[in-house]
Length: 79
Image (cartoon, rainbow, N blue to C red; front, top):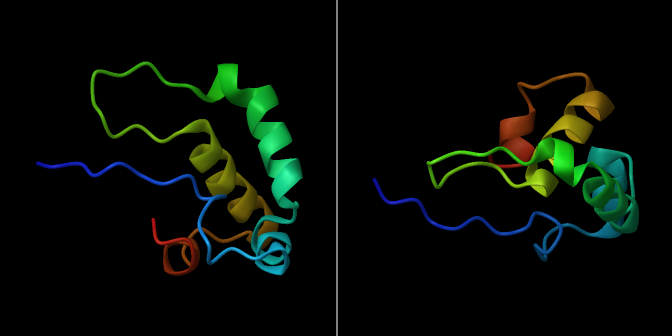
């Protein structure tokens, strides 16, 4: 298997501020602040190279909490 490096979801050009508020219910700065504060609790020690970053874990959780559905998430967030 070849695992390509993931990009930070907040750095992707397709996420405008309106989209972040719609999908994650927080602005970019709010997501970055919460990810920084929760990073020690979200980092997973693994020998595999495909673990999700703390920002990715937070974005997945915020999307779920904001929408109440995990089934639509893979269409919007491309997980």
